[in-house]
Length: 423
Image 1 (cartoon, rainbow, N blue to C red):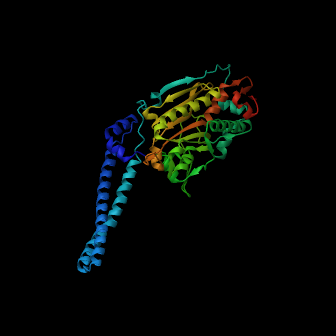
Image 2: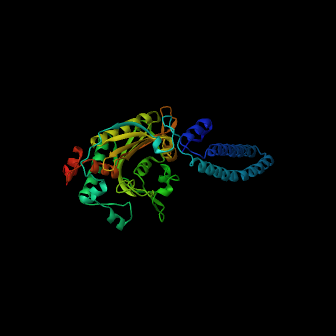
Image 3: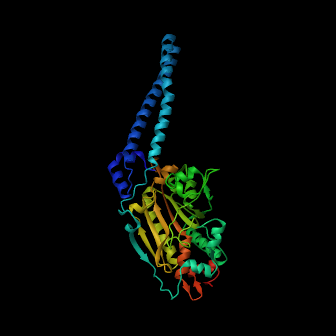
């Protein structure tokens, strides 16, 4: 959530940055400022009345001590009249603060200066590419045929049990999932991230804290009886570890990693773009999260991007890194880099990770703060990234490494999987 004082002091800059994100409800900016003016006016009236009550109450005591009962009684009548205004002013303050918050939460995070202008994924900037696209043998097939041939995934069984987008991993397919999760977690913890195994459902406060509510309410599965939400990513519960927390400055940075299943209601079109593992309603992912000093957040973002890049390099997958344009960014992000791997069996790039800096947008909602060296309270900055999302990684690994009657796995997975080949 944006901070009101920043909006007031930087109105034109806020409008300019919102335009980069192609945000159309710019009237909210002036509505927020007007509501803040109203809040200040009501607060000042309340403070003045409360101060008058306090001052008069002291004076009544002095008058009574000096035997001036008549004057004291007259002043008591004035105090009683003033007190009748205080409760209505409290109610008025609560009302205006709620209306102000309701407007504020509709404003997205402001994109950083590095964010390119644009509206669609075609406007994203390619930062760099790595690895080599494989040349496949004649007769190479996409992963949905490979998973059937090697009995790795049963998509039809998942549809029978639950519905489309809920695959069942079997045999070596399940083992490959487990191997990848363990390898990703080991890679992250070796880099200093503390592992968590969080709940896979969160309450409304947690979903609000990281910005999923109200922006992505329709994309989350909602357990209405208990008002819990199935998580779309481990970012949600893990970042909320530090909700309503005042940290010591020397505790920063905080580095966390977690595995979780992810649940997303997002609807998809038909065709190869959503076939097989390309788009699912339930999938596995390993996440990295950092909570850092504001002065360090962009340095940290670069380090997290390098971390994910090294992980992809270890999997021997061709990849590219994109800097997202304003129109393709999430509601909460200030700057996002996407990672895509090349899927040779489909002849296309597949997104496997997003690494984002949210600056203080999430921590303002979470009330995650720290005291600096001067004793001033500041909001920390939060960042997160996929390290990595499994479905499209599996798709690319299978498609790019198919050879003859088997699939050759990258060297780093041999010990984790217990074999060099899927036969």
